[in-house]
Length: 175
Length: 175
Image (tube, rainbow over all chains, first blue to last red; front, side, top):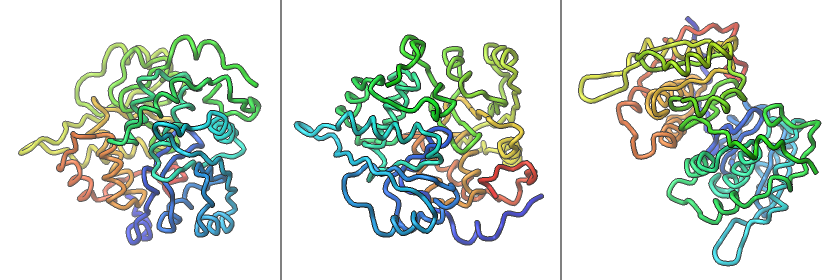
C-alpha cells in the first residue's frame, strides 16, 4: 500500500474552468487565475496559447515568466450575430501553434473555455478527420446550454487545407 | 501549405460515445463498436479496461486480438438506489490498472461513458489532489442531465489510501 503525499490532501489542486486534455501535448480551458497556478505547475507547460485580443493578465504573465512558459497570443473576437465573425486566418494561426510539438505541452484558453476554444478544437478535430457529429458532441460538452450555431457553422465550413502547419514538427497522432 | 491525406477527408473517424483524453496515457469513453475501430487504431492502444461485468463483445474482442491490445475487465455494477452500490475494491483495482504506465495508452470504458467511467475518473482526480468542485464539474460534463448523487457520494467518501498502486510504474503526473 502506498500513502499519497500529504500536500495533495491538505491543499486541493484547482484546474482552470472547463479544463481538459484534448490530445497528447494539448490542454484547453477557461481563463486561469492565481488559484489555478499550483495545478498548472503540474502540467509542466511550455506554452500558453491565449485566444483573446485583450492584454494578458498581470498575474498570469508573471507566473509564466517565473515558470519559463512562453505566451503566444492569437486574438479572436467570438462569433456574435449578426455581424461579428471569427476570422479564419487567426484560427489557422492558432492551429499552427497547437500542431508544433516544440510548443508542447501547451494550454490553450479563452475566457470561458466554451466558444473560441471550442471552435479551435473543433477545427483541430476536423484536421484529425473526425465526423462532424463527434466534433459537435465534443463542442456541446463544453458549451452546455450556450451552444452557438455560428461556431458550429464555422467548424463545418472551415477549410483544413488553409492551415499551413509544419509537417516536420507535427504530432505523430495527426499524421 | 500542406494538403491533408485524402483518407481523412473521405471516411471520417468516429470516436466512441463520450470519448475523451483524461490524462497522458489514459482515455475514457462509452462502449466502442466496430464503427469506432478505425479511430481506435490511431490511439495505438496497449490496453482496454472494461468496467462492466458482462462478457466483452465479440467484435471488440476480435479487434483487440488483431491489434495486440490486452483486455482487462473490472466488472462493476453501477450505483442504483436504494440497494446497489459500486464496490470500492473493484474501483481500486481499476485504478491500479490505469496507474500502471506499462498498460498505457489505455482506453477505459463502460456502457455510456457517464457513470462508472465517471466514478473511476473522479477517484483518479481525487488521487491527483483535485478539489471536489472540479471533480464534480468534470463528472457532470459527461453525465449531463443523468448526474447521480450516489456516484458523487462515492467519489467524496472514497479513501485514496486504499489504492495499492505500484509506485515504480506510476505515471509521472501522479507523483
